[in-house]
Amino acid sequence: MPETKVVDARNTFCPGPLMELISFMKRAEVGDQMELLSTDDGSASDVPQWIAKVGHELVTKEKIDDVWHITVKKVK
Amino acid sequence: MASMVASVAAASGDEVTVFFSMNALQYFTKDNAELAAPEEGEFGRLIGTEGVPAFRKLFEQAADLGDARLLACSMALDLLKITPEDLTLEFGPATGLTAFLSDAEDGRLLSF
Image (tube, rainbow over all chains, first blue to last red; front, top):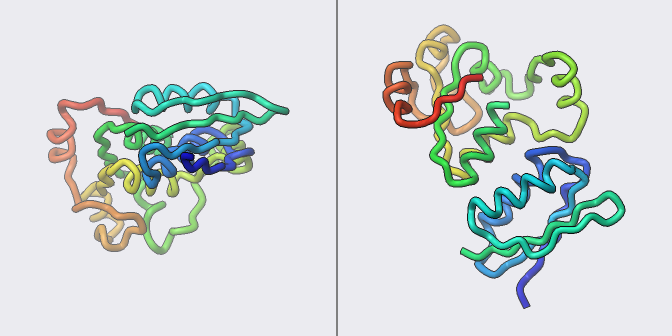
């Protein structure tokens, strides 16, 4: 099972959640997953853009009770 | 805004060089490590009170996560009577405007 780390970036604004994700990606091993929690709607669109640009995998993205749960897998 | 662009671009794989001059440099001296950025209008106030990452942290992340180069303007250093060693973040060598512009001429230049 890949490791899934939860990173709680709730109540921070762009680019806070994205930078949390990027610092995780820098340290993670290929195959690791992280679930980013964010209350920032801007980040919900910006984070997938970054993932696509850099070439990682967006696993899931859903909003539950005003919190975005974005799961990302490091693929390279 | 400069710190946001620098950190996101650098962490996305772009080659980033930040040239600090004029009033910007004083916020990075060891004596002013806690000096707050001036609040510019409503947005400056909001950024100070809401959970927006601090500009020093973002420049640090730009350098750590994305290998951004932070360069201090030699003229500004001279006027402040300091050297890059007196600055808090990992700054590169003192750099003149001519050197920076020729280094950046093939890239996108954003001015803040």
